[in-house]
Image (cartoon, rainbow, N blue to C red; front, top):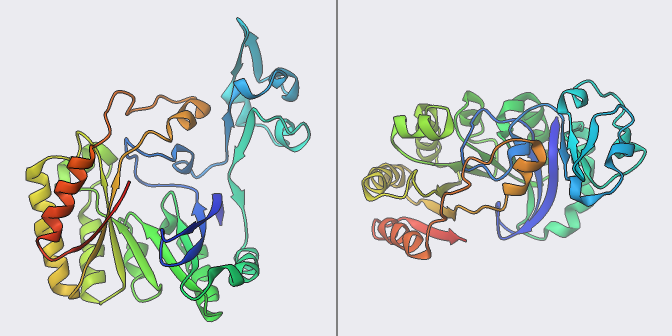
Length: 297
């Protein structure tokens, strides 16, 4: 299993205190993604040249050059680097390797160590990237954790066949619902959403404990005609499930520095964040339809 980060949260990403394991690799290319290092399934280098004065010396393969008092990284050299001395030997803060391979046994062992931190309601949450792209390893880890009575939640974009197979196998399924319109979804994420809608409907029909997440993005899904379509779909879901819980996540720009560190352009540079008024308006629209809504800002 290849991960790009781990961390803890409380009251987010599932109930109670959670250990979050972020799996690397995603089949979507959401323009607003705050974790661009999660998209590629390959190991990558994040380069922050302002963190060190010795970046050119820390790379023993000559991938870093100094030009006009600024360091530049030739990333094509990094693709063939086997030792990553910049990190493993010199521990230069300018470089970060993103991508670590761990086994299910290692993951379960760490979860056991953290068990006392979880309390009554907490547990492990798998996020991404898109966690279900590593479905074999993911399902193995889920089965081992639940056999030890550790609560498991999985965050997914819902677009894979494996995402639908999570239904009934996890304590909580957290599924993104970015928009209802197929063409809009394709334009902004690079993928269609037919399977996403099927996954959410199937989870509701099977009474799977479910949390639907809506990222509110200016220019993408912040207009009333799309909100009406989303509300109608969620009302159908509620009718199947009996109860439906939704979170609205307001877009932010916290991931911007990571784009620069990866040497890629930030697509949302000049896009404003939704206002609190926008968030409340969408929340009220859903609440008035009997849907449980939580706003995360």
